[in-house]
Image 1 (cartoon, helix red, strand yellow):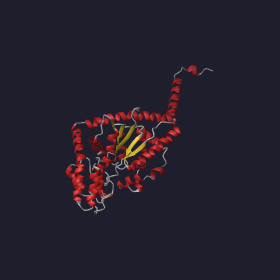
Image 2 (cartoon, rainbow, N blue to C red):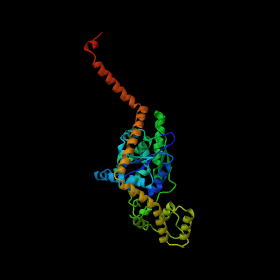
Image 3 (cartoon, rainbow, N blue to C red):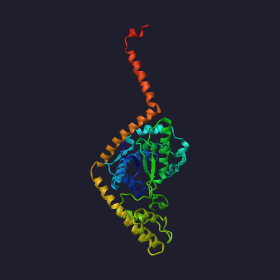
Length: 360
């Protein structure tokens, strides 16, 4: 690991393109942190199988992976400073995850609200939750610990998963010797964005790919405006925490302007449509350069594939080094090496002339 920079891991499931919630939740912070950290950014296709394992859903993964990477690049993630890699292309992570499962109580996993929320969004009842979804946080821990990441930028709902990874690292190091860096989460200061009412009750829940209530980073200007105008208007005097004003707080950078917007609406000096217009204007200032960068990368034929392959080769090397250390620490490598040595010795003994075996 580069001694001059601490290592960071973060990423996204390729279950569709990324949205404004991802932008304020983790994307903006990872762009800033690539200046000070060695960044590993995972395209977590194995995690997508926890709720989307049908053949037709897997067949859509190539397009989703491309979309997610294009979105990362469009917001400013630099493949020259960040290792962007495909999770399923790093088989050593599977092995690390299985070993970490042996150290993780089921009760710890079944009590995680995030797992229940993911199951609900996927339309899964308790009896239909697959083992992979229950073990999602352990696989996530394997991703983090594989890279020996010290910092993990996450949304607030995933902070508990980093806490689990931290506890697993501490337990492993205590039981078997110092192998893993102990990760810490960093959570965006921006609260989760509400969704939009493109589905019934969309603004009552956080913005989510699975909930279908998102504004995508790649949405055209007229589509962004249409979705913003689906948000309900609060009564004058009740702008605090209203869905539309949550967007204003996330995208209007000038604190005085934001305070004036709240004050003018609450005393009835401006109407809801004027607030919508101001939020749409602020969003477009953010999204115009994102769309331009996305178009540039999309036009460079096979560039996205090249970035993913290069990053995955780097991640594979790191993962196999970590797996070797884990096996050594647990004694599994010695077990295997001992069996191999005994077998080799027996084979060499058999090669000796017959008369030498009969001496004595």
